Image 1 (cartoon, rainbow, N blue to C red):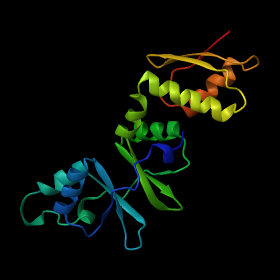
Image 2: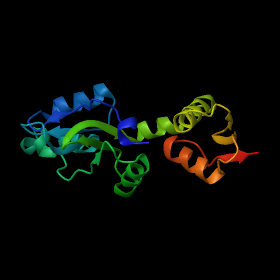
Image 3: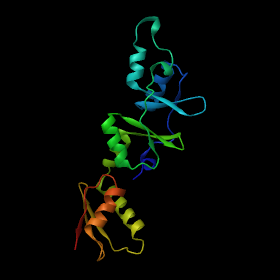
Image 4: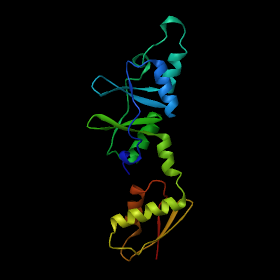
Length: 186
């Protein structure tokens, strides 16, 4: 599964000259924890998060930050829309970030948050079964003889002869997030 398949799009963005107050309203109103900050030509120039805004909003005195540029992070971890969801998840864990902008041709096309990834893992057994069947139909269009049983995210498969468990299990692990390794039954 690719970042483009799990991202929220279009991304909610801010400009560096937006006020801190406006940025707070945007994050709050959209129930998001961070937003990419774009420059004059739509290029990514930073990221602003809840913590950046909270620190800015509660800064004492006349030196309180006024714009997003005053509080945003300029070092931003990003992924391409073709990045595998596993690589994306590893990046988010390693960098300890809650969301990551998704780029295509150096333009922000979406965002992936921890919540987006959790939504994949929270799917019901029926939803997982349908996703597994769809993946099998796509890979084996002439074979409609797959039996799929999903219990608590664990998949039991019964399929045509010659489909080795390693091959099918690998296919499902790469294409259907939230499934545990499949057991191929005979």
